Length: 105
Image 1: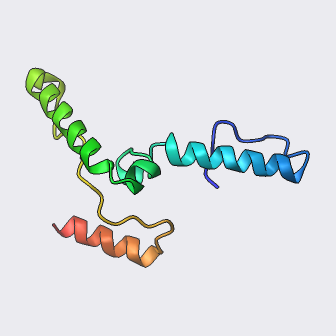
Image 2 (image 1 turned 90 degrees about the horizontal axis):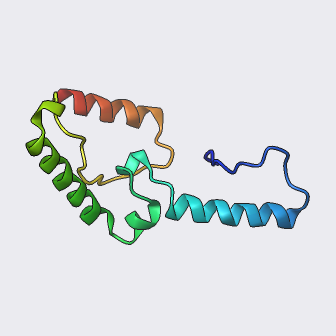
């Protein structure tokens, strides 16, 4: 499980308490936690297809900010492009291959 600010430090007093905690964790993880691997949208936003619109809006905001204050930007803005494929636990070979492809581009 991923770290959560409300991670229990002393364990759980009962199985029911553990189950309640996991339900809260899943709610937070799915609806509040923004994931870097999917460009800082929540899994729920991704699942509902809201991510493309959110990412397009973020791109517009960054472009407008860059146009208003070009002195604040030394390079490109953050990449808000949509992530096509997401892997929970990509194997090492797939990561190396993907990196090689990106570096070759």
